[in-house]
Length: 376
Length: 262
Image (cartoon, rainbow over all chains, first blue to last red; front, side, top):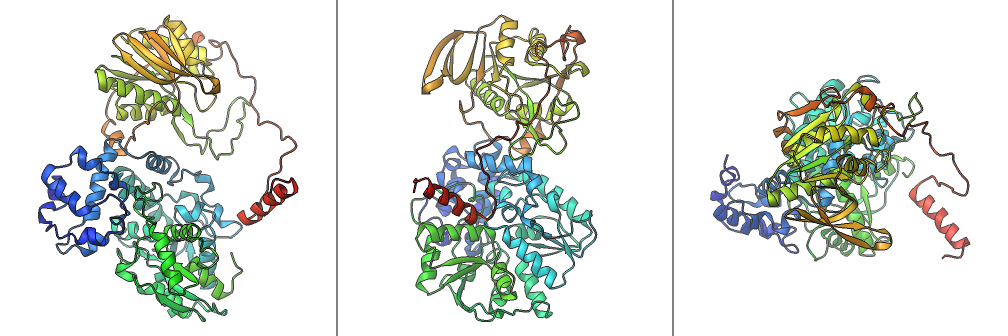
């Protein structure tokens, strides 16, 4: 199909709602409205493909949500990136992420043998080699390898265990979900990852999949073909387990907590309430709302491949804006439910010097505290 | 400009705990990930860039068993026009000299202006094949090339020297250059690109068709024979801290403070 036809560029009204809501356009040379017009008029010219802002897009999909014609500008960006990928014209750090994923199953290029190191001495069943389970817990690349995040799957496993959930993991067989790989424009590699993971899901014997990351959740739910599987984000599963009375909080968390909506959980999948329900159920928490929350949540800039390429913009990082907003509203903790958001926001506390005042936590970590697990 | 690039498939060894195999002369290959030797990737990119500028043909050659066809496919996807694999059960245990002899036998029937190899291989790092191959073919060669410009039948090449110096040579073609990493930024080779060349022919030669005998390859055909390989014994004076990043940082700053650095 023709590129203009595929992304319905003729239907664009040039109203500019996409650019107006774009969390990147205010600081980087990315003007999505103008780019769509340019490609409509001139085709996929070198001029369009060489626009530096192309790699700034976080694929947060605010533009998709706001378009009055129902177009998908963020997908159009992915389409342009795919052209660059096929031509081999990709930033070096993105090449490293793609090749690391191809060779080792994760964008950081870490050894596959070390994918289960996050577990420490925790006993978790590997499916199907070590038995059967109803739920398959998909850890994700960042929580598997990043020392700041490795405690999250550990704590979540302990929560599942305490709630009596019948679950297991894939261990070192788990490969990158491909969510960012597709958004970088490497459709072929995404297909390979989808094929490999789907084969492992089917042979695991599990009936349902729960993911740590909204990015993995999004890929499995919307971009894999997992008929017969229930696919949820962990905040949805925790809400269910709470309703069934299987999670009990014995410790107060006396903190003012602002919840940051991850784009791939909220905007792209409409999961706004489960994370808030979990936080509200924890005794002692005073839940605050950002002025920009839910559909209007400010993207942290960690999505769409941006974990592996620095933006070209010289303005403030969105994470810094977010952290300052949190301080201004008197929050002590910014809670989120996404490994990328956690890392980018935590960087924001460091670059703004607010490290001591604002703590960034994953909801799992707060739930662990409220249940009374040792601090991890 | 017809260019030949000699490439090799090597194991990725970063982060991996290597184990010695039963022979004591090699490593266990189970669980290892293999890919194109990094230096060869730069050599391929350089060859394809020259071809894109002047026209001609790029031929990628490897001396290895069938599992190495993936690096040849990658070379074709990157822009090579032909791929050749020389193989034989007798090549096991070949040193750089024996490999160069086999490459020379493959190359003798191919017209070329330029041969590029990587400076060395990620795995055993001898850096022998390039220079030896040039000697066997009777052509000039230069190593550690960090920049090159081809004009008519000559090449101007920069060599990386110690102490941050560079040497510029003017070399008549045909010639062989061993390419240093960083000479260019190799393009990305997509999975779709590799799929597109999946059906492309890879010519296969064995020692017989190359006019060589088993005595020319393997240990018999080599000047160097590996005696044994082993991990170096643990020495003294180094301490490895374990624990959480905070604990490790505290121990390190403690040492700095005691040593008067802080």
